[in-house]
Amino acid sequence: MPSARRYKYRMSQPKVLITRGYAPEVLREFCDEFDVAVGATGRYLDRWELLERVGEVDALISRSADRVDREVMERAPRLRVVSNFGVGFETLDVEEATRRGIWVCNTPDVLTEATADLAIALLLCACRRISEAEAYVRNGQWNQINPDLFHGSDPEGKVLGILGMGRIGQALARRARAFGMRLIYHNRRRVAAAVEEALGARFVPLEELWALSDFLSVHTPLTPETEHLIDRPQFARMKPGVYFVNTSRGKVVREAALVEALASGKVRGAGLDVFENEPAVHPDLLRMPNVTLLPHIGSATRETRRRMEELTLDNARRVLRGERPRTPVNDLGPAGTRRPGGVS
Ligand code: DGY
Image 1 (cartoon, rainbow, N blue to C red):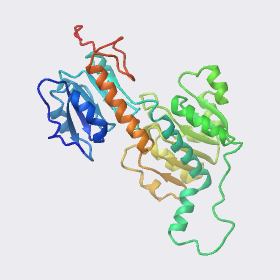
Image 2 (image 1 turned 180 degrees about the horizontal axis):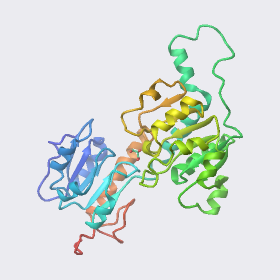
Image 3 (image 1 turned 30 degrees about the vertical axis):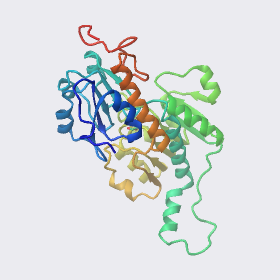
Image 4 (image 1 turned 60 degrees about the vertical axis):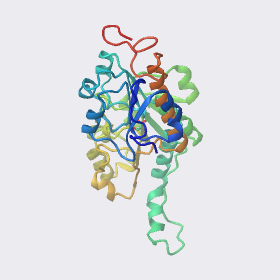
């Protein structure tokens, strides 16, 4: 792992702070071109460390745990790009960055398939009671042949409601079709008719999504509009025995309401990769056998993580070379970084 010491800033080249260590082989060429400092290896930077270290940097490669807000940007007068490792960017103040002429980039596409794989895995865990059944074996409870163990439900023929039909929602839809599921979805904007047709998915208003789904999977980003979008009234409108999956953001759901819905049987089972206050998990969820709990590993395959590292570096490299980044979140124009006052 490269150390902060090894990649200490040199005077002449643009300076880059990567807040958490990357694979050395991914960094090698990048380090030839730029002065790179790695904030921390195997942990996240504390807030005060980020504030202290961002002062001289031209590019910041951030993680979902790094809050990059006005205070950080004020401390970083040279900053031209924040390149975030992850598709979600609710921790970055995009408006403030745009005002200051700073590009904000994320890593869409490269993690789509991995995250959709995990969503379908969680869906199957929920309806086939896989975590429960596995615990039974591990705990030594399986001591006689019994055909009546852990009967679950088939996904085939059931209605899957997809909340958020972006890239990951669509990748889940393709997988769910292979399981013979019937698809409905809700999205801020309805997707093109050709896409709907290819996926075999029907757009419905939110109210119908709650009421018609046998399975519900969340794929919406966290925004002020989606925070706690699923709360007690929404669970109340759902079918009894619905299965619930979330690989998006925990705060889209009020966790206490989900716990109540699970306790009452309204939600029969759940698969959760994300939580309202990560890494804390509601204590009742920890005790519920019909819930599979994962530590936010949606994109955690070696191949995907490598592609994410490469994309964050590529985005930063392009901006520092005066080019347009590959996957920007904001739009500062066709090429280069427009600084306030027109400086590029
Ligand atoms: C993402 O890509 O947004 C992941 O959830 C990591 O934060």
